[in-house]
Image (cartoon, rainbow, N blue to C red; front, side, top):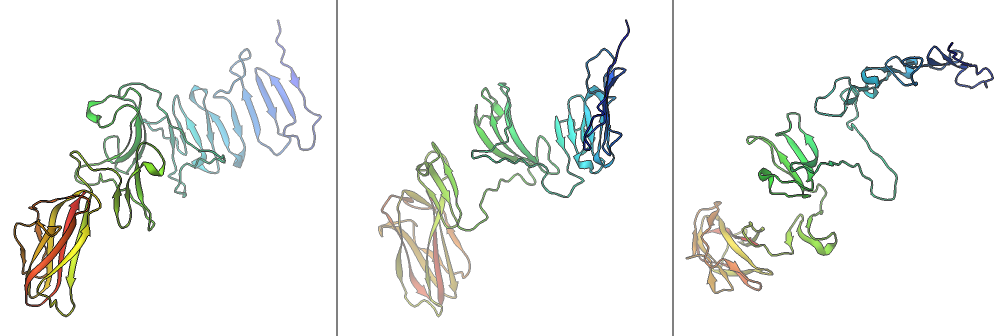
Length: 352
């Protein structure tokens, strides 16, 4: 039986038709646009009896328009003649954009080394809803998680990276049990000698860092850090280190302090807290003693603290009756002043 390959002649074309004829011949389809100033397209089948598919024998050549060539596994490679950074390469299970070098650790790699923009990838959408770039791990294994990782130039899978992620539903690892199944995390890792700190902050003035739990409304805010204060809406308890804050009193006179004694009520406690350090400082050639008490009755120092060295902080960490309740008043005083002193400063460090 003879084989017949029909020919489709598209001669009845308009002046702006993109090809002149479509021919089926010898197992292939030829779309010939040689009569126009367009790129030629040649699509070939692997044999006369096979279905028509793109194989390593097909090619599109178009001068400055670019070329498409076949490679192994019948996967196309798109190479731009004008800009190498837009070329796409692929092998059995990996794809790269911008380079023919395949990373052994990635399914898709995008190289931006040869171009000037600092942004490698942009995702853009226009929708009146949340826009997302979803990253999902469907494994329910005990070590499964999904992570977005940034690596420094010296980084790898063990150090030099920052990691934002979430554990999968069956996660269970004794070495990382600070988080359990479906817990999220943000962490950074580097060597013991350099790096590894995590910096969180705001660059604009008068902006706050807020922490919240159990909901996403203003009533769920638990901790706020601003330019001038730290506020907390829940008690600090257990073995956690509390929030430190400082209260200070300053007695000063640019021509010398003349009163031999003085007392100031420095602060009214709006919440329960405790003192952990008392610091004192003088400037001038004189000397004095300072005292710190609660409500004018309970002294926090076993005896008055003598100060005689100008420009030197004296610290006391052994505090008597350090706890403050709501309504207690911090008082600071000095006495037995002699010589010339221009400044007497007393700083009390609390923890809430």
